[in-house]
Length: 129
Image (cartoon, rainbow, N blue to C red; front, side, top):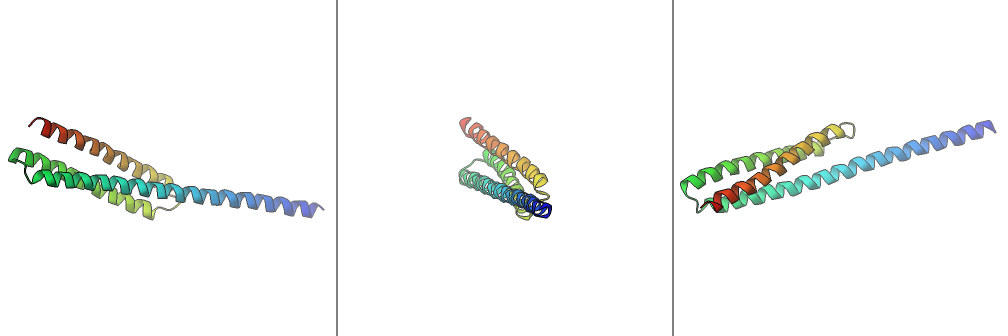
């Protein structure tokens, strides 16, 4: 009888650990998919901002053109950072996920702040004209 209880107890323990393991994998996969989606949206926003700059460059005067080109360079750098972050997420292992997630979140926050600055810079640049 003791053997049956030990066997049942071990089965329960292994089942619980198996369920917890599956939940961790699911959590990792879900978080990774969410992060990939956030990065894709951010990259699309940066692309849109670059396209906006390109349209404005067509009719810009020299002083405005110089400033727009500087802003465009910053946006291209932001896009490169997002692409690198997306590669890091794609290559992330479950064991290193927390570190990867932290680094990628900082990049995402920096780029988001850069996009806000882009909007302010464009408003300032064209509202003063």
